[in-house]
Image (cartoon, rainbow, N blue to C red; front, side, top):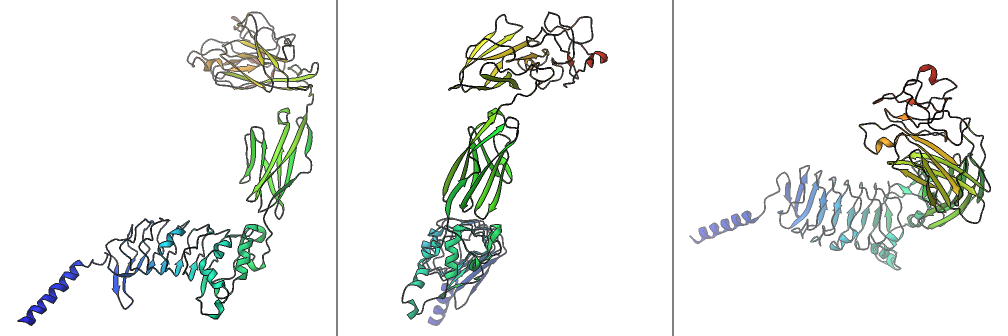
Length: 560
């Protein structure tokens, strides 16, 4: 009877222990041998590391699963784990505390994931780690103290990543490597240290010089899995093996130019050249007040249209050319060529002088004046939201920049508006323009009266009933400056064209004639008037149309 009771008690204990033991993860395989308990989860949908796993688990293998990250505390119940295989998942992030509670871990394999970086300080929690496999990831940098906590590591695989430049200090600071190099180690048995660094896109310039020297000096007990490391960039060294590559020391850029002072006639093309010698290869940018030019993927990034061409004149030498087409007076000044690399930056100033030229006057436009010691070029450059923008270029002799006086007159005012403008300003905006009105703007130096030839005349179009109150006033034609602004549908515009007879009375159309609108009052620059009205493709309200014969009589130029 006692034996039966003892047997029954053993059965209850067995059943109770099985009930407390977690079952194997669904879709996974559990096994146990003399090595210990193993859990394998292959090609199943696991979004995170399972929590309720076998007790005293020695090996965990999860592969080909949609596992994206290892958060903090992922292995909180696995303090006995010694081998962790997480190959060919989609792991992109390992959080800083992800390896906590793995004090017995000896092997970690993360092959074929999407890691761009590794939290190297996380290995403080794994002091017994001997094997670290990180091949076929996207790691592109190694900090100098990356390996400081891997004191017992004997196998490190960083092959087939995206490493370009690595400092030799990464390995010189590695305690496991320093142990191998200590004097007297040859008298005792030391473990072999295996490194795999091949199949990375190594950039063989001066920054890799120390690492190349380190690789070429490796000897037993340190072994490279593949000792034939190869340069991929720059193009001049592509395909060269490390042991056949000579790299120079790094140095900051040194800049030179064929000419530090360049003079060009206005309207001619000019190229400024800057030669920079540096290692590694420098980045060159050109600066000018309020502007900057820099080459980017073969194109120039700039606030203007000046192209920048950069080429390699020789190894560690770059030639940059700033092309200024049709140089104008506004282009003159000091241009700074700036070359920079990881060692520092240098700058060189090139002075550009633009000499004005006197081009022949257009057939229907007065010549630009040059009275006294000043040359003035006044023009309308564009329409703004509320009016137009005037711009001028002045070449004047004198120790300082001149002041300006701008006179603005129109048909609607009896006296011109006078605006005093300080030195250094070369633009002025006219706003609140009235429809069907002729305006004249004249520029003079330092309070001098308005002079003929320094003026620009423009006429606003007719108002349209449905347009916004301000927009309908901004359809402007420039009469005396060979520039015509864009015309909206239904707007009337005046331009310097064929002959017509002038009569006083403003811009009203001739009531009984179809040859075009009556001309505006004579402009001071011309002895007789030469305006013919052109109607836009569609008109709203009354207006004058051109007859075919009148429209092209006298060599009329079509501005539309």
